[in-house]
Amino acid sequence: MATNAVYRDPADLPAEIAIFPLPGALLLPRGQLPLNIFEPRYLAMIDDAMLAGHRIIGMVQPVPDDEEAERPQLAEVGCAGRITQLGETGDGRYMLSLTGIARFRIVEELAGDTPFRRCRVDFGAFSDDFEARRGEDAVDRDGLLKALADFLKANDLEADWDGIRRAPTEVLVNSLCMMSPWGVREKQALLEAPDLKTRAALLVAVTEVALSKNDADDQRKPLN
Image 1: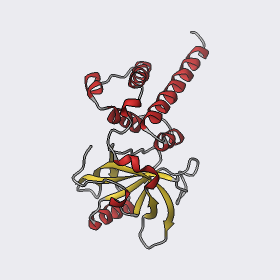
Image 2: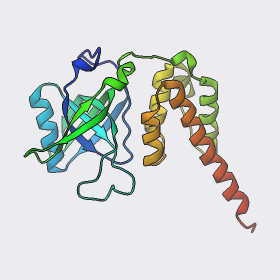
Image 3: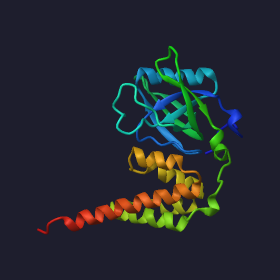
Image 4: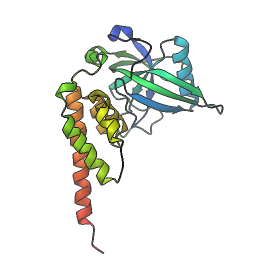
């Protein structure tokens, strides 16, 4: 999704950003992540991003097995997003949509008196993220659609196949990754994939492994 602001390279983004650690929440470039914000520290984070004018926050997953800590260790790689929609609910919450811009690597966490965490980040290793639809031609789109069809069939789910077939490949890959039901480790691997082709192939592989495991579990069930 395009935003009103234009981001051409890392220099267009702030080097210090607020961090929202959220396990299982995956944001990818040009993807849209809906968020329901209710904790006071994160309400303050949104207010700060809006007052600063850049509307940027960084989504980062906590390190696996550390998610329940009061101050969990952060994964090294996250994705910066721009607040593109913001609504107040009237009961103290924000409902917002975050549009992904580019991935970053955390350089250091900053000390400060804000209730939310802030980090100095480096976007340099992910300069390709600023180019929309880069690498689409290398993606095995047919293999991706087959894996999706197999997953939907195994779980008795329906999908808008006309919309799926019309979707640009980058949108399709990143949206499926963000919506996938896989765990923190798998989603972090999808985030850190070096290019769109690798991300799509990894999503297919993770899906096929899960489907194979389900088939094996079904075969071990006793017959009534």
